[in-house]
Image (cartoon, rainbow, N blue to C red; front, side):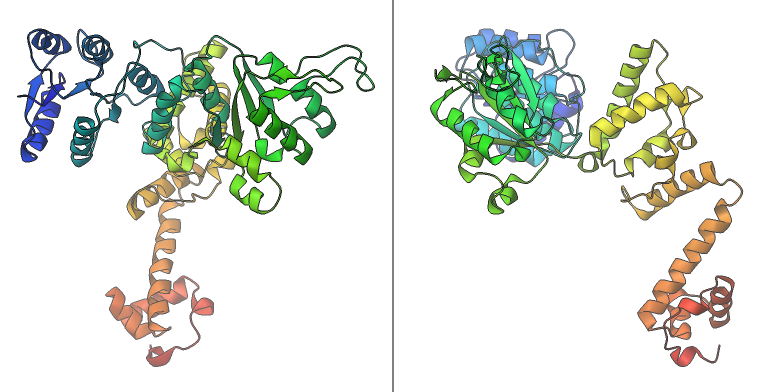
Length: 475
């Protein structure tokens, strides 16, 4: 019996999975297209225990295969593979009833473990696959983003309260909108409010509305955000800054499902899914007595953490391409391109403003960069002068990025500046190891005693050498 069926138009992927399953003594069968697999399913009995399929293939797609397989065998686990790691694929796969979503390139041991888990646990049931309309900014191939995509997919049929944690500019509202758009409440309103941006004395009225005459200036009855979001989703951004008295009112709504307008006496039912977000550590704020613990537990049913850019540097190139195309479309101009050198330089920067800062940079480049190809020298001066906080891979790549920066900023001085820095670093480290003894430092470096003395003088290092010269005094 063929326990696992593999469907992929890429022969190399099929071969890798076949060999891995052979090693584990798991029976398998492979197909080069979805049509071949569907034809084989017509007369098979019993069906395979697990189906592993690519998502993009000539002819019938993996999502189409998933839909047809689920219609006939609703309990058959289907694992969807894709080299195109985006939210659309993940959500569509989970909404179509996929057991799991496996981005390429994958770890072979992880894939085999996933197959075993699918065999043991059986399948998830799901509806038909659909073509969702997504915010295209939610892109990413980084593992941390794949976890976010998986979570959104798994929550697509849920009404659960969600708490989103992430630094400023990581895309918390985009994720909240995606959660709403792929939920059973998608046809009802999505209402967003930044609780930190509204004055404390107005926030209660904004959230719950008010009755006419309930306070000075309340000339008419007003529906609050909870009523506006009826049957839909209410997104409470920067929930960590909510005043204590409103935390109490929000807790009551989440607990009882009812609220009162300001000045009102009639309870109003709140049929709303709440998604909250904050850049703060709510666990710490609870410990400090600045956030109600009971409210925290009400909000913290499902927690999603959005990674900052520095944890997903591999996504910077695709985000840049997307934002440059978006800005070009808005301005009616040809999209700029960023050189490989400039891309690597940008990947080394900290980007404290995260995706929002990257989007603003791309808009600036679309307007301000002189040519179609953007180089390091075309970047805003505050980025060109910014020290690189982290070296992406090894010291040679970091050196290459520094060379690129200096070539753009101070041509004609690059070799001398970097050579002096390089020699000074070598000598200073060696002297630190030997406690300032020059002869031993020279031996460690593989240079002569006269050479190290001359270099120390040329580089002006006499004043910063360690105090004890030891047996180096005779140089």
